Length: 294
Image 1 (cartoon, rainbow, N blue to C red):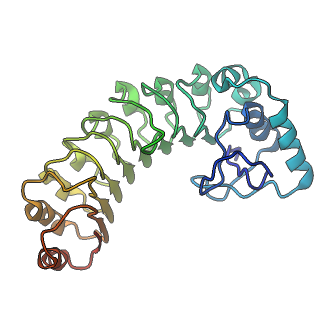
Image 2 (image 1 turned 30 degrees about the vertical axis):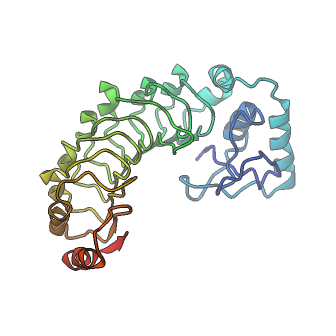
Image 3 (image 1 turned 180 degrees about the vertical axis):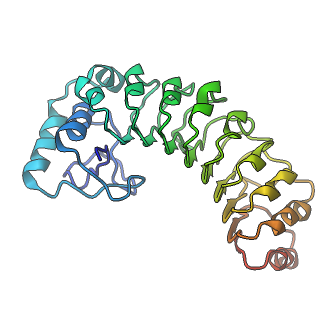
């Protein structure tokens, strides 16, 4: 399974960034040629494509990869992606990692990768969601998130996002979504959804995602949890943390809705600001069997 996952530490490259998984920022040392070379020529695989890879232990392979990096003389990552013909000819690619590439758009050639199952385009600089992604119906995992420092500025998703009916994991964290996008409500295979750090005020439609097991809606603008959240009977993890004290009018009333979720095991309530240890204890008592993080 061709994949683009790599570790700067294992390649002997210092990209000047101390990231937990040693993943370098593309563009920091001009790596697009390395992208194509590794994907097509070496077909490197990872055991777990969502996290940092372990590979390139062979000295000759390491040397080849470093030479590929050093051979590139253009800082424009998008332009190289558009013209890298070897990449788009390999239609069997199933995993592609383009995170931290300072990307603002994606080439139309991406639509040729009809077998692509995992796409990571997080920590980039998109102002609109790249519609070409909606032409990848085999996608099962899509990462389009960020953090406080590096984030896209997307406020909505295109109508054709509904084509991604095989999605199981979706990261839309740290964008500027004002509500739960309606195009998500038909993606009933979703099991893992990260909406942290948006501007979401409404979760209307969340009850349609009945297969959700993990839901992160921390650091948004919610004033209430919809009653339909009780339909998420498969939910095991829920993050309701806030930047400051939550805007819920009645915190206890909102948390009572969670008592009907039989499989919920983990609940994050950071910065909920309970008035006293007694109130905090009451919450713990009402949500028996659930590990709560305050």
